Amino acid sequence: MAKSDKKVVRVKSTPASKAEEARESNWKPTPEAKSKAIGFRVIAGVLWLLASWASLFLPQPLPLIVGAIAQARIAVIDAVDIALAVRGVPGSRRLALMRCHRTDMRVGATLAAVLNMALGLTVIGWLAWFPALVCGAARLVLQWPDVSLEQKKA
Image 1: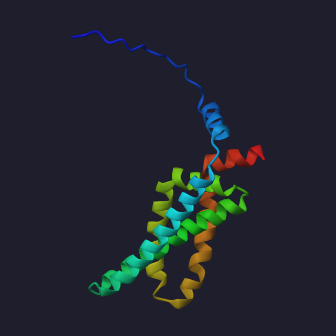
Image 2: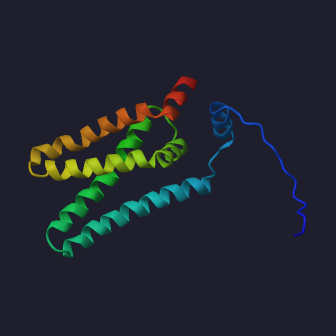
Image 3: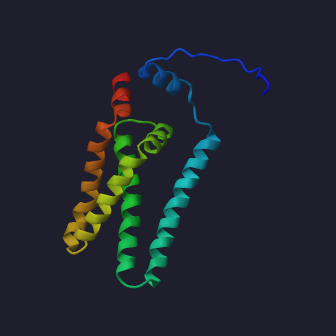
């Protein structure tokens, strides 16, 4: 076997908070990245809407389930966005935070879909669904360490 000419480079480890601060301070979204993020979000919303409309042609219990999941996913994204906006997080940072905490949002969307189907039995229950979702998102956002660190900086 031939000997490789690659050099080994060692990097000193830094504490997680310093690495996080360095990454955040250097990261500036370009206008192109912002427009792509907004475009992908609009496309995702339209695709969920089309999926819920297309599910009307499926056998009966399926359209209700697909519609509830579609509404819940869109509502959770909006609720988390509202909660972050109220905390004063800028738009580009909100997108990055939502991307980092995607699993929390998926769990919330699943629970929101189940709640949507359960409250769909009573029309009055739907009146409380979205405000309750926004309150839950606000409590969820408070638990994210990224947001609490950002609040302490301001």
